[in-house]
Amino acid sequence: MDLTEPDSGRLKREVEGALQRALDPSDVLPMLHRLTRTAARGSEESLFAHQKLAELLIERHPWRATLHAKKVLASLPDDDRAWAVLAACQAMLGNYRYAVSAYQRALESSPSNPSYAHNLGHLLDVALGRPGDAVPWLRSAHEGRADCIEITASYAHALARAGDVAEAKRVLGGPKMRGAPREHVSLWKWLQRGAPTERALPPLRPPMFAAWTGSAALEPDVGSRTRIATDALDAALSQGLARLPVDPTQRARAATLARDAAEYCRTAPSGRPVTERHHTPTRADSGNDGDASMEVPTETRSLAAAVAYAIVYVDHVPLTQAEVAASFRVSASALRARFKDLRLRLDLTPGDARYATLRRS
Image 1 (tube, helix red, strand yellow):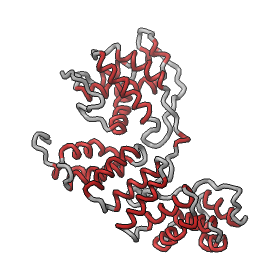
Image 2 (image 1 turned 90 degrees about the vertical axis):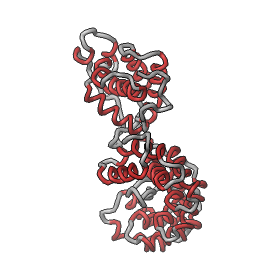
Image 3 (image 1 turned 180 degrees about the vertical axis):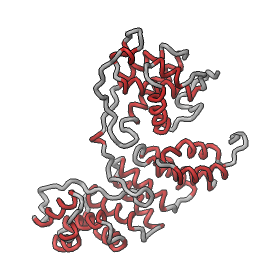
Image 4 (image 1 turned 45 degrees about the vertical axis):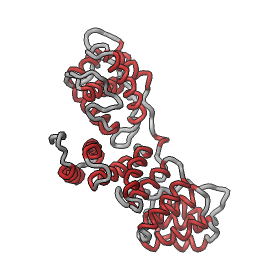
């Protein structure tokens, strides 16, 4: 598409089609960012793009998702979906009172939405320790979705903490626990013991974003994540860049991008932690010069190569993926896979103001 005469309506339709076809909706992030830049502020296309970005970025980047949701609310102050996204983001960030207020605003516009009522009630119960205030909201959610075991469990939990253990047991029901998740079986056993307050339960996980993504959690599962070894990444990046025709400013931008990569690439696209697998360097890994790249694991060199190619991509440097990969002693396919993930996670675009320099080729 010729962006000198942007057709935001056509781009919106392309995005909608891509979202329907994409196995992973996050693959459409670059197109959505493009739409926010080309559509008129406050237009239907602009608001569509910001709303979709907010929804897609909740789990990985809740703060950035918050900014997109606020752009929608600036034009549509009564939009329940934008308020719900904002609430979910704030819950992810630990700002529970803010999240409660945002869910209340969402419910003002959509009072019969059981997902909003459930999430509000669960936050009041588990995050703020106000089970009595949570019960009416969770009762409403349960009446709207009696078939949802997550909502039923949250309702029973709040009832018990509010002092009505008998009603909690009736709501949850022993036979319903057959085949239920382990945490719900634990809840039933806790109720059978009289819901003792001295023994805390593991937090229940509500379907925070069920309205549009199907499932999610109250808090991000950060415990299983493994940080990239930044020292090794910096070393690999420095070694590889020394073999490429880039200037000092571009190297500095690459270092900045590497820090962001280490932050945002803590998990693989599948959700598994990115870890440094044990690797025994070979002559093939290091080429024929026996240089220090043998000391850096292949996983790290692949990420460093992706960072370097990201600068090439952003700054229009005339280098191919194969040329960059060779400088880092990794395969072009390994670079390509890591760069695709990096581009999506950091929402990279050509000329990206965060990493571009004044140099153009």
